[in-house]
Length: 253
Ligand SMILES: C[S@@+](CC[C@H](N)C(=O)[O-])C[C@H]1O[C@@H](n2cnc3c(N)ncnc32)[C@H](O)[C@@H]1O
Image (cartoon, rainbow, N blue to C red):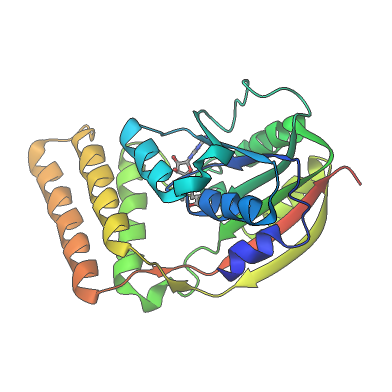
């Protein structure tokens, strides 16, 4: 929770339009919506995700409970926020997502350019991201899960994740006309609901394996590897989320 608290620290959350990029399972969305409710504010959150099937919407809405009135969920791509006007957003929260936007040099800049376009002058951008592999080695299951995901995506000619270091993010933000206003590190911590995370991971990976342009014998080897990693994590009994950092920035100087 410390990272979530630091993300909102010092922000005026009253009468604001907040972009949550991207929603994922809705952990940060639920936290921000609760803050708005607790403060008696009238702000609204636009939660965007490129992958928002109805079963996920339902799960996120369940998680939001009474706070779902503050949130509008939109299926959309961070690189093309065409449904948002220029300078229409006061705050952007981008938690645990940058690593999926950074698959090629300059891709990150493209996302930041879109964030800059939709933010009002002086608007705030809060980025939470993960250190690559730092501390992950102490949790074999998590390390194997991450390596196998990267390998399967590589075989498909895609990128699973590409973790930029804080200095790369700071550099990209400065190029895009942001001023850094705060930064903090957070140690690795256990992921709650790791069973749910693993079930989703197994589904994703199994679907991906079917798309591999190889013969079925090879695909079977990878399927078995996915199963092995899945069972290994269940046996280990926990997943360790990697160490994170938060960078806060403001549009303009
Ligand atoms: C780890 S989750 C985000 C976690 C969430 N912010 C939270 O706090 O619970 C990463 C999300 O990024 C989404 N994503 C990846 N690339 C995207 C893109 N180009 N546009 C929008 N969403 C994207 C994925 O679908 C996934 O749901």
